[in-house]
Length: 192
Image (cartoon, rainbow, N blue to C red; front, top):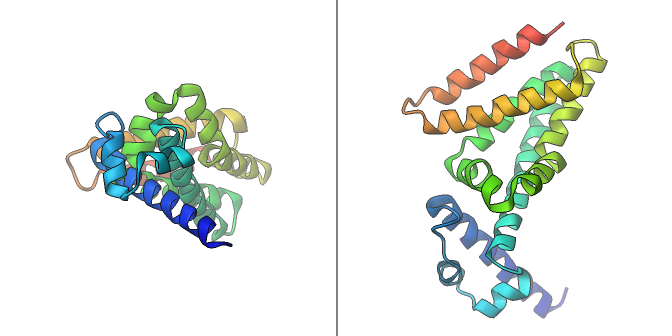
């Protein structure tokens, strides 16, 4: 890779890191382009060389976070001996990852309105929700979970996403632990 390409990659990385930090602490609406440029130490031209606008930069931050979540889910799920246990472990890994204040703010609270519901759902389907569907299908196929895999995945996804919002807004520090415990109990009731 040439010096020019390395410099471009470094600039892009600085933009993404600065944007992620600002979107997480201030939210998308309150984060101005100038603040991102100042935090990244780059010019407006550098921003527009890499991204069409602030929304495109936000979308890439979301893609990157989804990729991180996907790796956590896969790692946690793959460490289990059965499809059902992998499904549960992957969901718990998802909750831990998404409950981090920066991730919750960007992916759960801001992304649906900034990207639009359709784009947000498509991004979710390519990442975490896609893995959830695979996990539910595998658990149904092994006979440890009963029901329509698509509908079970939709309901579990809704419960997990709202649970993250609830835990993040709770004033009790044990909210995430309660959420995870309740999820395991609920999933156990679906087990064959």
